[in-house]
Amino acid sequence: MPTDAHPNILDREIAVSHSKPASESAAQLIHEITNFGTQILQRSQVATMQDAEASFAPLALYRHMLELTDAVEVLVRNSCVVPAAPLVRASFEALLALAFIHQDDAAFRSRSLAWSYMDAVQRVRSLERWVPGSALHSEFERERQQDPFKDLLGNPEPERLTRELQMARAMRDEPSFAPCAAELERMRRAGRRGTPPWYALFDGPGSLKELAERVGLLMHYRFQYRHWSKFVHAADPSQYVDAMPDGRVGVRPLRQANEVLNITQSAANHAIHAMWLTIRRLCPQENPAAREWYAREVRPSLVALRQALRASRRWSKP
Image 1 (cartoon, one colour):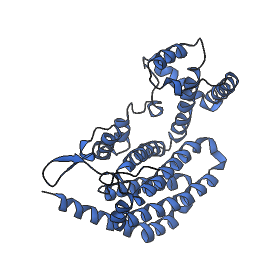
Image 2 (cartoon, rainbow, N blue to C red):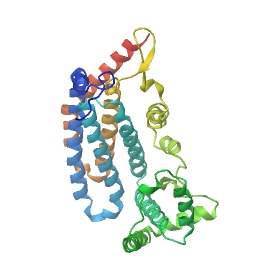
Image 3 (cartoon, rainbow, N blue to C red):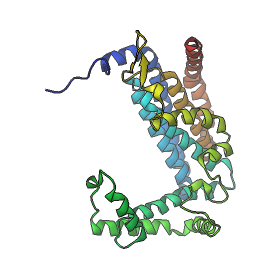
Image 4 (cartoon, rainbow, N blue to C red):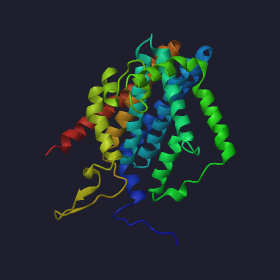
């Protein structure tokens, strides 16, 4: 027979029932933001068909953010709030990328192409690790022999590897990427070691922290992003332990909804900010309708959410 979860650690029905008053309204807000975002994404895609090459990166990043936001809704609705933190963290990284691409009209095309180009570079390097005789393959084999899960990673079929590598190299060597390739070569000649992040090309920031500072989101990076990162890297004991009535410390049950307000506010704000960035450049004709929608469907819920968040913080103070 299937195994039942220990009720002290996981009771799904009770968790969902207890969190429902907060999680249902929070999930509905995220649901609405995601739905409207899909409309903006489709209209932006249609509006940018004349220059699909330069608009691909911001459209792909916005789609990525919508997918993350959609997943946050599912987790919040099912009282899996704390595990939604990695998704909110990832949506913040997507927001940083979008903000940087959209920040400078003159640099929009080069930054957008840099995002796609560096992905192609990394794709080629990843595939080349499987090619016998290459420098990357020798390093890869040394690493694989030390990995306890090495047997789970099977070798790709030679014909498929050759085909995919040819396609990846052709993508990397596209004529439109020539300025990016020249910039990467310049950085290497200047002493840059390793593969730089895409945003470092053309004298861009050298780290995620610098990227956040460049787009005016350093405070959010310092306080929120690092908070989520502690959970992602399993370095936040407060998420795993609870004080027992007799003073002992025990393992905290799963599906705790204590972060529902903070997670929802962050996910909603990231998605909304990304939407305004997308509208401003890719489909400005949608701005009036979007502002009307925001005032009607989103602002009241966000205001109520922020008030609830402030109240919960006051209540939690010793």
